[in-house]
Image (cartoon, one colour):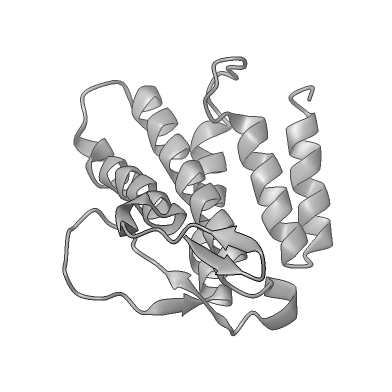
Amino acid sequence: MVDFNGFQEHINDNPSETMYYQFYQKIKGCNAVLDLIDSAIGSDEQRDRVKAEALAIRALLYFQLVNIYGEPYNYNKEALGVPLKLDANLSNEPIARATVAEVYEDVLVPDLIEAARLMDPLDYVEHNYRINQPAIHILLSRVYLYMNRYQDCIDEVAKAMDYGI
């Protein structure tokens, strides 16, 4: 316990208990799914749904991470964001931090566009506590909003609203 002028802060001695570590554990799980889904047993529709969900969840996790540990995209997109780990291969090599722009432009937007491409033709399933079409479009709209891409934001909200939300 550390005392900062009357405010006590618990310093975590175990890195595996930090929020940062836990986010990357979840990203590692998404990466494992994405690395292996094409050879998985099941129909094309089932594989597409799982792949879309993994892409969307990974994008959500990176969106949260970059907004916690990086500067706002619309303020300084060239600032350092977070390390990008986009496969499940384990390594002891450190990963350099990507810029905020790289996180948004190379991961968030492409992952969500691909998730929407895979998910949109599938049957709409609601109330199962899983990622579905409106969730993907709403998340993509938020990413576009943070990027000041207002028309793209509006277009994605319209796509989500087509599902009756």
